[in-house]
Image (cartoon, rainbow, N blue to C red; front, side, top):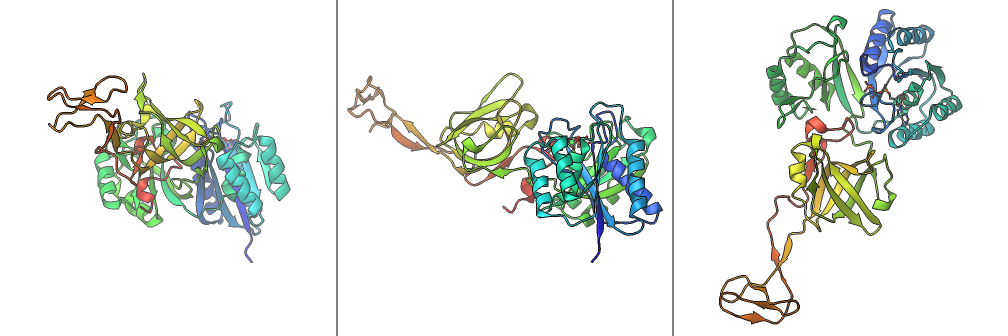
Length: 419
Ligand code: ATP
């Protein structure tokens, strides 16, 4: 049986530069120069979106090589390049490298899910890594070992790919020279095999990062072939140093846990929950929109924040009594931030005063005194309002999602859902 050496790398970058995927791409090229090929695609694994020390998207990277006589040289190359290229000056950059040469066990898979659903300390990760036989390398505080162990351990039942193209160092921090028309063209030809390329409402080119990192663009897809085609179509007016396709858990909803009741939901967790709308959504200064939902166990405030743009308009159509399935995460403010929702049952009934025989809607004749008609003087003794079916903008069973520009890395877009 073939034995593999797994390599996990995390926490090498800072908001001012570098990117762990770039470092991995660079290492993979160096390994190749030394006659060492990686097996399959390298993996970009997104972990808990609420992790405190993340730079941006909380991603760790892993890859595997055949564990033969060259494995020792491979380890040396990895450690040398992490030492050479990590952004050590940043307090928050604490790289961690993991080597592992056994089978990925159930225990390791469970650890990886914990790194997506909850928080893990450096000490816990180190203890766990040692207990399963990982070779652990910590740089500075070595916080990266938390994500590195998860990046090699996470099973991928559902997955996507991302092609990342990197700039030459001379161009870091300068405006990216991407021909936007070619991105529109690429999206038209390759969607839905590729997705998240453009936010049409906002005129936002989502493949282009907004940070000074080495990435020129990143294209996301359900299959690797479509990425080759997409890359061929995107025109850029600056050199590309290298590019690399990563297998990822992006856009799989892997961060979402099914909650049976609102009372089960905890802060910094991401959930799917079915509940009833308690009050009409309202907007506050800053453009954030809120509404409450409830079930038999309790209630929670839901938020559609300003960056979700037009999604707030959709949310504003919710009404008291609507039953909806919500997907999202409970953040810093303890509100449930909505990533998408499905309407389960709309409340399309409104209670109104009865209509008189003459056709005019009646008015109240006073408390518990029934209704009277102002036009013909007719009276009804009963004070019971009558149900009237109203038309709704939202549709039963339909899903509604945040726009591309506000999408989390892990959120599954509707174009990937079996609807
Ligand atoms: P980039 O998106 O550019 O790769 P990043 O957002 O991934 O950057 P990192 O520099 O990787 O940010 O920092 C995230 C840190 O959080 C890493 O040290 C990682 O090990 C750690 N981490 C990941 N998951 C958890 C978790 N569940 N609990 C605690 N720490 C975590």
